[in-house]
Amino acid sequence: MMQQVDEAKLETDPQYRYEYLAEFIGFGPDDVKLIQAAAPHIGPRIGELVEKTYEKLLSYDATARHFLPRQHGFEGEPPIELASLSASHPQIQFRKDHLNRYFLAMIGRAYDAKMIQYLDMVGRIHTTAAGNSEISIPLVQMNALMGLLSDVLADALIQSALDPTATLKTIRAFNKLMWIQNDFISRHYV
View 1 (tube, one colour):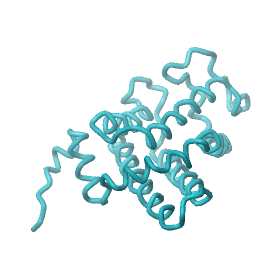
View 2: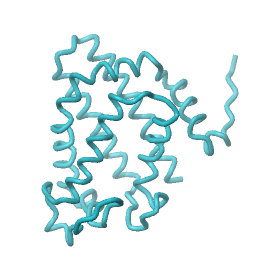
View 3: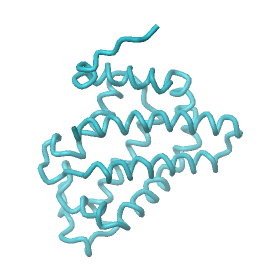
């Protein structure tokens, strides 16, 4: 029997949207358990994953330029120009802390209504919809970031002590989650 989807509600209700995506993609409680069970393997490597991510982000002008405007919540002096931007700049350290918390949320939080709000907020804060008119990351850069995050997570899992079957299942679980996250980013660009 064909399932009925309220397409208008998909655009207005993040919970409904998440439930639809999760069901369609096949992201369920077993996937959440796999992601959370990977915490002992991913958690200790989060700092390394963040550094790899920012090394890549700062190696392209198209992504690095978005770290020049003052980031919401950062109280120090933002960088003045791309030439003065480095991985050790306080504003970059501030952003790295956010990515660190994002990884921790993925492996440690309950996948409940608050997590769905969080996934939606992650999408919104990269656009002018979150209140900072200077922060508007082009969708192509967000897609590049999500692809990079998927790859660094998969690489960390491949290098982990998980057995091959658990590794494959966990990579698939993270892949499903990252596609859901990517949708919660893309929805703010319509």
